[in-house]
Length: 595
Image (tube, rainbow, N blue to C red; front, top):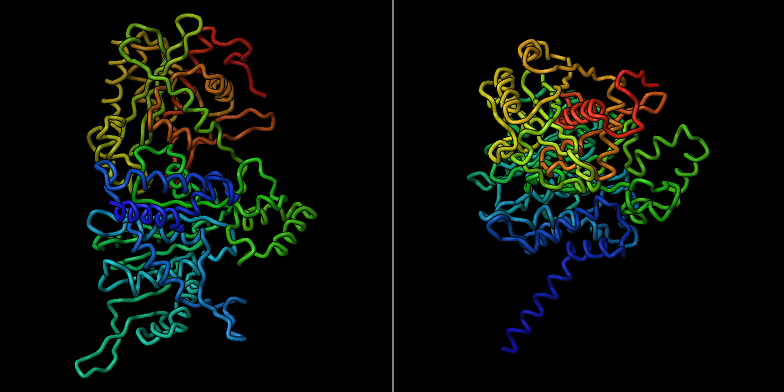
């Protein structure tokens, strides 16, 4: 019995010393200064350890697999900079910092029931010079040479906007191989073609190239290739990619792989219409903040940046965006960059973006998740039967989400406003939109949170019928609608309901947005905690005119995975209902000119 307890004590002690746990604990107890998003990534790991290998969470953390990957990478050599020097017998092998072990351990430690890796899609964002390219090359070499379960005919692609940029990471991976005492004899480089292949023995024992396994760079400026079968796709500096074309090509070719992995390595940028900011970053933040439900458990996210309100000139917060501060990021040089930014404000934007991983933007996230979820009081639709309400209708164009929100003003003093939603999407587009937007539309449909309509375009007849069903159950005072693409629906319903056009411009949306925001911030709204609306609120950003009036900024549907249709419908419904029913005092009337 004594030996049993001794064994258990050693096991507990060993688990507590694991680098992933040690890093998470140091971050969460404040010993390591970190931003909110890193803290959430650490908490996610600790929470997952507690629920591993359960019916709802069939993943297990395999410490041996994590250690195997860490040990392999630490046998590779630095290939550039002072760390690559061997003068005086210096050891130039890579020494992973604790944060890097947390990253690598998560990627390779978490396993599915069949032994394959849990994570298939990774978003990693950090300021420049924090060794993300060296780490990415090390991960590529591990998967190429030592991954378990083994992947025969392993193909690895380093992708960037230009072939030259992609070749930089490929070159580091190549040099890591050439400077390793064992690996250098197991592969062959074709410099002109920019290929690394494994070698094998022919029948006579002579080394020959195995072209089924290869590692190569791929630029978006090169000819797009079909027939790719990637085991690993490393997407470098995704913030600079104007479209998701190369990512889509690579991921679509992974379907036959046992445990494919997409690894996005990037720093913040300034392209707010690109797929990094519009799709991948919201996905990562939604997972960490748990605003995206259900959480895609096969996606890993880690973002090092400054928190809102941090002063980039304060050295105490530099480590938040620079986890390698003092290792590959020299404090003196960072201090010089900050001094330059303070002396020349025109340079501050570049410094904040590249050295502190801050997306410099003219738009702002509106209502944070904690404020929104404070209004998640349950709403019973049956008890609202017979009550007056106003509908907000935000129609999609052809293939996207359509939203209806019913807003119920308080019937008596002290009662909260109540909202209920209906969301629609064409059945035939669910999977395609899920792939493009990277949100679980099919699961939401299965849970009844989205109503699929027949065909591959918006079924306006079906939506009109749903509105009539609302009208049978509730007393609809008005239907506020975005007039864009609404002509057919308005023509069909105008004889049955009072239809009010709400153009998507500052007048009147700034007034309605102000009403909506005040209700939310004062906790006078009950929205029931609808998972999709929680995600939509996390996607909602606002823009302002010269007078400071704000309104939601609709994302570009063709390039963005963000959707705010349900929030826009709620703003229109609550704004109209508040004004027509006397609402709060102190708001402008709907026909006032804003500004």
